[in-house]
Image (cartoon, rainbow, N blue to C red):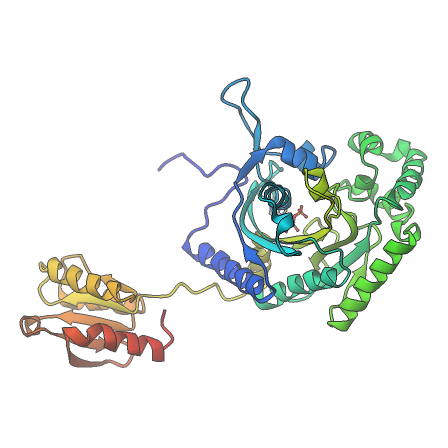
Length: 428
Ligand code: AMP
């Protein structure tokens, strides 16, 4: 047996898991279309500074979890694998002058992200996200629209009991005063702070609210709340977001300590959790408004909001709930033959049908017809196309393996007949 293993924190998605992921990607893409998002791709890696500027140097994601690529020469740029998609999408928005497009620009990316995190359940070094960003809309209505789209994703994916946690983290007008209050609060509790959090007190005190350290729980829950410090404009924005959520029937729980790990957020911040799993660092997804990011990456000031939903955690949630595994479609037909040696005819007929868009397997093993048919039944093919002596006159036997019936069909009509049967049976 080979001693090679997939790298720590990664996992192979074998066909059944891949089908489960494809199903989720399909739901994401369908929702993106329904809500007016356009899919795009960004590179799997970017200049490190895109993430340092865009996410913030004093965040876990950049400080501890960035998957850095070793430069090949001393003077070459340093890159990192993308830990999230927002910074890359905004980099692309600025680079391609999307500010001249009709606003807002609604973009979506589905794909792998990478974080050099300590691997554990639901936390991988390579994982999948559905990311959706609306750039160039100050809200508040769109904030509710984005939150509602995320909730619909979980509903359509079949994850029960997903709860929206909601907060406003203020903006550049009111946050500085709040940060000052927060800093002096934590400074007065400095002795109780773990080493890392003490260092963060200087660089990013907001992050302390988001601490993963269990010894911080009591200090954090008694900390001053941003909701007590919002300026009038942020207060009004937050109230309007809630009113829109109420109007579209999205329940939410106000969570005053929800700040999100990333520096560029302003005003609306939200996360999705399964009810009862709120405290376990197991967010299914999250997002928020990032009104300063476009400017930070070299564009004009542009307000924006988006989310990233973790698809791995949705797969885990569905597994835990005992959901039916996603189905991989069996072939519509298997081409078998009375003469085991005549692989030429079987391959030729299968190739013809595949050219007509049908999902067909050719039996290329040189086994007796009975064995060939057995295998076809076992893999749940609907039909067997049996090649025998009739082939000389241009006919084949079409056996319906589900109904157990069989009839002679001219080769010229075969694709049409199979396509019709596929349609009426909803085969792919
Ligand atoms: P974040 O940008 O950290 O809020 O991530 C958004 C979502 O991506 C989270 O709510 C998780 O569902 C998912 N996620 C983040 N990091 C990981 C990871 N290391 N492994 C699996 N899923 C992750």
